[in-house]
Length: 444
View 1 (cartoon, rainbow, N blue to C red):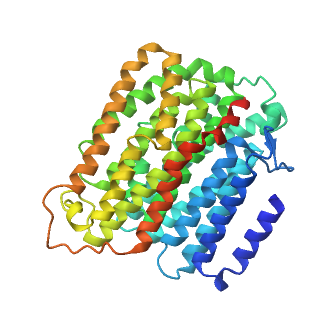
View 2: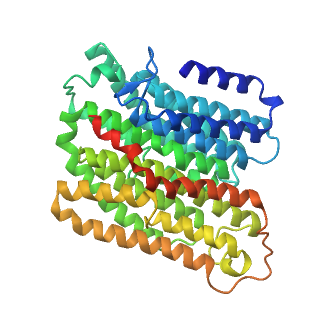
């Protein structure tokens, strides 16, 4: 199967000038459908395995998310910008190889290549005059903490004569405390953890809409996926520091939730909400419980769909009014009543209301945290309250109020509705098929 996928993908890369971007997009949706049909054929931990590439259930659905989101993004790209289409196709291949890597060295290589591609997207197609500074922040933060991660992987390869995940998972690996912290910081920055989120805000504000969609839906999941793989291998090290990172992350998430209530720029608010969700996800992963890993994985999928749709909605308002300020974009119920319904759907999913997939993920995350420490229930109450408040604040401020009638909005573009619906349908209807995540419990 892997050979067939590479062959078909290579044909598209070679003949992309002869295909329309919508055909490429539909082809990616076909790959997602094909992977979805085959996800239950093997209940083993690893399958489709080769010498350096393979899939397990933790990477399988993330590969599906990559192809699904790239199918959506190809529909978002304006005109016949073949350079942009080609770059996004190459990014798809790199992300696919990242999630399929069995070796930590290969994972690190493709991991960094994907960040370089996103850096090019920001400085090439960014919207603001500050995009060069945003690109500098993005590269400086990521490279500064990526080099210690590379040193750690090389040290690991030297000490244990292997960098293959399959082999290291069978060992009780214990390394030096400082080396382990170097490894953690390389991934915590890219999640991002509170206090390391400055690059994310600048990158989102200056990135084009498809850049923000890639960054929120897939790039953040690289950090959580890498951390997930390392935490299972270095279990003995993780136990010693988990309580510090867990408490710090959940308090940071509550603080960022309060910061969201002060925002007037919709894009900044959505970017901050990503940091809030990732803070809860990160704190739950460090409980080292299976229910925490399962909830983290479900939230990865749901956050990728929800945040991407919210960034696209913000771009719709920006393209119509020329501003991202909620003060200008209010009164949506009068100007674009159909779009206000989709805005409500996405804001309600962002606050983890029934029957969205976010609700399932956050319930499992909170279960793992309460099992770990009963006292943390008080922090989770504040987290849930403020998350609900800022999502409701964003919806009510944009949809209600007196409309600026000097602004002319066009609500009849069907492609906008189509793109938002293909985000919303899996986000809410996967709630009915949670059995697809059940087999994750069989993994260590």
